[in-house]
Length: 369
Image 1 (tube, one colour):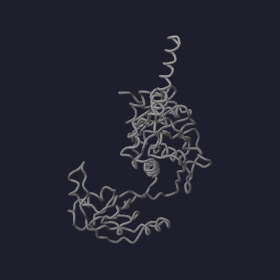
Image 2 (tube, one colour):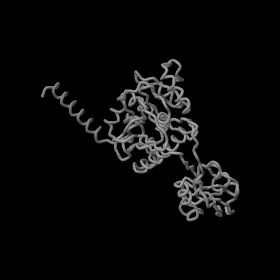
Image 3 (cartoon, rainbow, N blue to C red):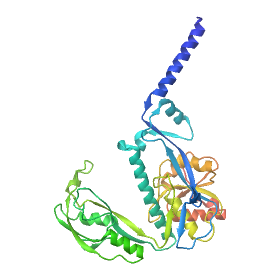
Image 4 (tube, rainbow, N blue to C red):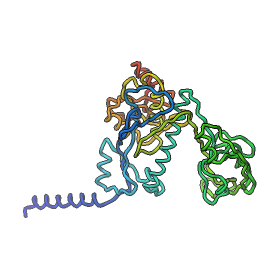
């Protein structure tokens, strides 16, 4: 066999071997890529994303699209070829597997966590939107979860309204922990509560909940925490306090197969648009992202660059960007997309006013600095 032919054959065999190895060898990485975007003013799977009843609503136009990121599953084993392709592709990002699934978290656990965050983001979006419109929302502190085998198990239940601890009224969930930890482990603490069933019945009837009574619990030592050696000296009763809101009318958010908290800002804007006359977008295609709390503060999210690509590909011209994500977003902005920096829901509504008026030079922008 001629030397040149033999060399080519050997090279081909080596290349085939390398390709086979690349396909067979698994690496601990996962891939993030642009996910679908959904107009919060429109429909998804044949029904409105935002449905409001019991209050006057107004016609809307344009787009207020929430954005998502598609990720590979926790059980998916990426091979070297896929990892290299992902690193080279502009519309995807390859990250260490533990970045998306820390501490060996399974896909089911991650899905459940994302669902809970998504549900909470919906509640905060409603509260923030109504607060922005000066529509009163009733809030109360409730038992969110009860720890198994704790002092509270069988005595307090999820949904119980906590009116006071040791006679001191509680207004925020964190007030409960502050009052309990004033005790030493082994001391009694008195909760003034309204049972969950009574509270739910009163809400359904449109009345103030009645039937408050005192419950006495004996505190215990907090479990050991290597990250906080002093934790074991702290008194606990074994509950997590949260906030429950009563809205003056029904706001229903329906969007399947989406998780996490990052759609909060866009849900709030969609609610505001439906509850106010005029067109909030001015007919423009606007996308965005960002968590939101009850006070309307916009927080950062993950996968910002993937969301920018998804928004641009869907047709967005403007992208509402959380302040803390601005630097990363500005470093790789798809052509034709204008970033608009937002810190609060009020910032977002004022920026939309500028877009409607054509005053785009006055929009707060993102920078790489």
